[in-house]
Image (tube, rainbow, N blue to C red; front, side, top):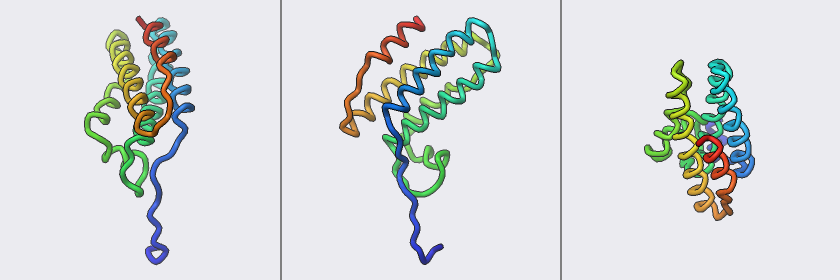
Length: 134
């Protein structure tokens, strides 16, 4: 393997697909908060975490080796902090507060990554979802 000089690659994904999947799943959070369904919230928070992590890797992956969790250790520290609120707790009010923070940082990160990748960013969906949760 060493003689083949295999180095791996940078993380790649479709920004539009990630954003669409994120907001689709974020929409479900309000329903599960209203139902006080901890187990479904837990699952959705995990999905949102994975999507946000993927988005950050699309924009900030700096290494060609290792898996996603390893690569996350090399993104800017402030971006890594954005992922730390995705963990579901028994406190539903805290979960609501956390998801609002997460949605805000996801929208900001996506906008920045689109700018870095010279892709167009449409704030319409993010703005609608933020208003939906207000």
